[in-house]
Image (tube, rainbow, N blue to C red; front, side, top):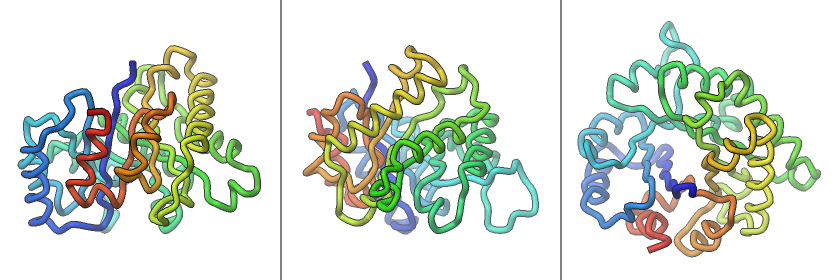
Length: 250
């Protein structure tokens, strides 16, 4: 049985002082013990949030990382820096990184591998644009993103990776893939993992859904057999909404 994994990606929102208050409230909240919970604040919030959530079991993750161990890369953050803060999880390949910062599947694969080399856990984001979906390219896009993103990832490292399917057309737009749409994509992603790593791995790997997840639609989405959690954007900024999603099965 795969454990539900609910992650909140704050993106470029919430100041450090606000983040500490949020973390304290989250720490004191009634959270379903059967759910794995993560929040990903901006880089400047990470030290204080880590301290606030120390020894709570709530994961604090980074939203991105550089594909080099160190060097002259102004404005970038390395795995080593994150690890020194106590950060062991990172989101890689979010659609906004792909769209706004032109991150290719190949670059994303480099980031995945350097994170794994530093013994970090990864949420690897994949998903199609509206144009790609309307052109019937859903499966070809997902196949390329999965196969390239996981290139050279060993059988021993694959369980350090959570996949997050995020239809780009449903992120920040208020649109949401129907449960049937989401389940179809998740089932195909699991099929791709089966083709790469075998049935035992594909049955165990966690695949989150991301794309305007809200308290109103979370239960329907989480009820789908191949959806194992959510990568939540806007709704994670309000702690009451985020808690509703975390506790969707309570």
